[in-house]
Length: 56
Image (tube, rainbow, N blue to C red):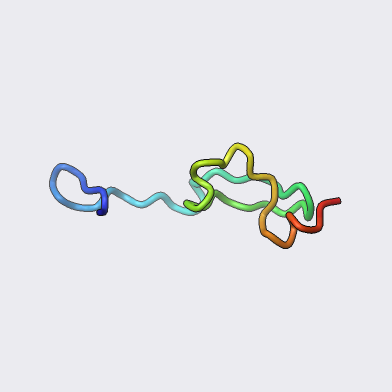
């Protein structure tokens, strides 16, 4: 079920540049918020599974 506004249209999308971002603790590259991380964004520290597996 998709969220709708009062007039029945979909809510406006956020631009990728407007999403929160962090710096990866392993590789140092910036990465942006993903819907997959919505519940635990505060605890996300790495940009990928590969970086998570190769902790310094």
